[in-house]
Structure formats: C-alpha cells, structure tokens
Length: 220
Image (cartoon, rainbow, N blue to C red; front, side):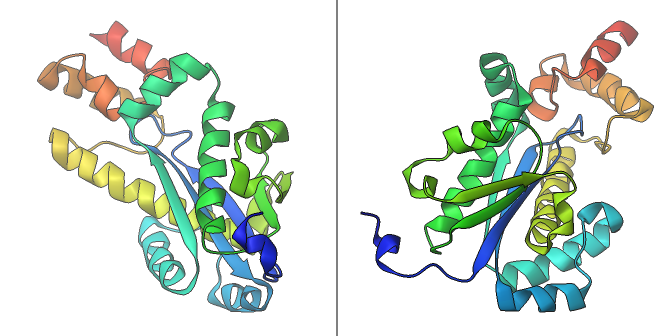
C-alpha cells in the first residue's frame, strides 16, 4: 500500500499542459500544477488564463507567482533527447504521454490527489499506460480546450515560461537568436545555424522531424 493511501485525498486536482510542441527550435516542456479547490478563486482573481493569451513577459511574471504559491512540476525534453526518442516511438503523442505522466507522478510524490486534467492530445490510454505505480489510481480527464480549467491554465503558463527560458539559453549557446514557432524566418535561422556550425547543430537545437529541416537542407 502506498503511504498516501493511508490519508484522505486533498480536495483539489492536478492540471497539466505542454509548450514547445509546435516550435521547431527548443525543448518540449510539460508542466503540472496542483490546485486546491479553495485556491481556484485566487487564480481566477489573478487573471490566470491559457498562456497563449499573454505576452512573454506576462507569462514570466505569472509563472513566478504560481511557482511560489502552488505545488508544481516541470518536465523538459531538450532537442537532443527529443530527437533520440522520436525515431523510437514514432509518435509525438507517446512522448507527450510520458512527459505528462511524469509531471503528474512528481506532484503525487508530495500530494495525495485523485484527479488530473490534461488537454486532449491523443488516446487517453497513452497517458494511463505511461503512468507508473504512484499514479495508477488517479482519475484522468482529457478534454479539448482544457486550459479553461484553472489548474491546466496555470500549468500552461509554467510550461511556456520554462520553454522561453530554455530557448533563450539555447540561443546564447549557439550565438543566434532562435525564433519561436515554425514560420519562414525559422528556416532563415536554420540556414545561418548550419552554415555556422554544420548540419549536426540541428540535433542540438531543433525537433528535426519537422518539415522545416527538409526546407533548410533544400535551401542549402
């Protein structure tokens, strides 16, 4: 019997969300946040919403507040690890499932909770199968637009802030400003990178299965 089974579950739930899934450069980050029922009002009054509704600076400000006030977990998969995992799993949903389940498990180390809410990114069984023993008894709800849930919204903010931080340091490391997203100027940055560091740099900074990689190679 797990130790938490001896105590009643806390009245709250875990929300998880990811950032970097659609960004060519930088890591894939999943965050989890545990929110007690009575803390929901505080998040609402703070104006916490899906991170896509805020500027980068506002995301960073909110992330600092959330980290101080709520139990949370961050799981970051850097480009090199991502590029190692993708050929093995051949499915982004499986990578996401592993990361979401890890974020949930990390929080369950500290909190006895029986409910987690995630955005709907694939078959729920992916996450349930990836959950280890500590998370095996948790109820998992996957739904579209899960960011309407305040715990998920808080997680989306933490994930985005961590993504932005890691993208910044990656940019510093390679000496080129790595843009967010996957628009045409991402190709331009990729061409400069390969010209400066060689083709192997793609493994270090980008999710190379994206079609952007092919466009960079064709341009060169």
